[in-house]
Image (cartoon, rainbow, N blue to C red; front, side, top):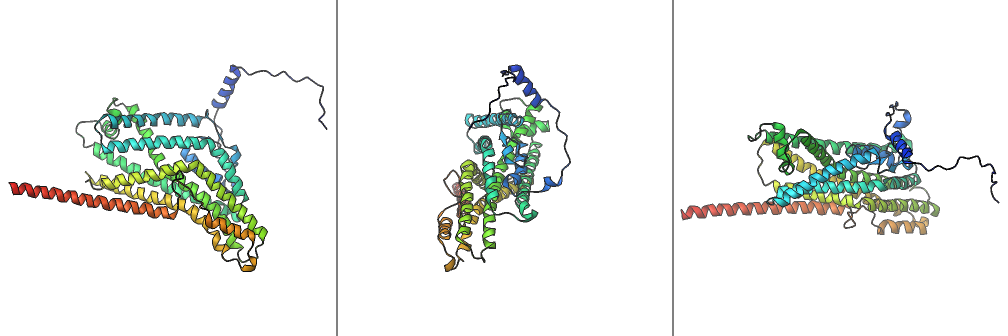
Length: 447
């Protein structure tokens, strides 16, 4: 059988578009009046319980600082997400990447060309880290639409969430965590500015306070270029983006971990709700398939963000070690002392938060065994046995480039390493002080 073919050939011939047509389309897509904001309706405040809808605010906040330039993040349907190299947010990301790349080049050159100094190396590491993080988020943005489509399919296959509160609990948890992390990051950055201004005002060589601030904080730039207002503005603008990205990497790992652990939690809640009922083999087969889908989602997500997880853990450990090393030095003012300890507490707290939220994925993946162990002998079946074997034998967790798994054991290892490093530094500092005192006594004896 075939379709009837119309003999009417009155259609217009196909005309190849010229460069005039492409120019008109480009102008129509860029040069237009912004749409008027509509009033929010009740549907805008309702949630369907998917991770894509819960994480929209975090992605929108990131795009203000040139991260994850994905279009359509406010749409409830993940199929409307798309990544475009020619979108306005993509050009904004290119501009910021060029600026951060310039600061990275200057900091590395300033460290390598002059006498090697530890603080210069820390500055170069900070900008190299942020430039690579921007690259990783750019690569992730290309795969984000397909990842969100798969994640939404898995969310739809899970047991249904009853009530508006259950569907909105993930979004509210993510919002609360994002506000806390970024508020602490903003407080830390403002405190660093206060400390820098307080220090630069005491410099007698420079009379302009703005010039003194920028030259003292960005010496790797103004050692080679003369200071001007627009250079100072751009330098500080890119520095603010780097400070935001420094905290956003940790926040992103936390948000992803919350989404994955919430998917396991939905399965566990359904199992605990029906554990007193007589469960058939078909029931265990359905639950095992849902559990397997979430495990496959964890593997897929880990393939996309394992480099970002490695960045988060390595960066936090490096700066904790740097701050512990700097704790042996004296501070010039009280403001510097407050900023130092506030920064160290935030670093340690953020590192533990990343490790604990990421370890929650592994913890929730092991909880179905609590229900499987309560199955009576007459209710045991082949599908329940397969389900129990998968839960007990598989290691479901996020990883750092497959080098380590984010479990609670990692939290203990990291904490033990930090405490050991602190004790070694304290002992080294005591030995150094005793050697200095011994040298003084020897000099007094010779005199």
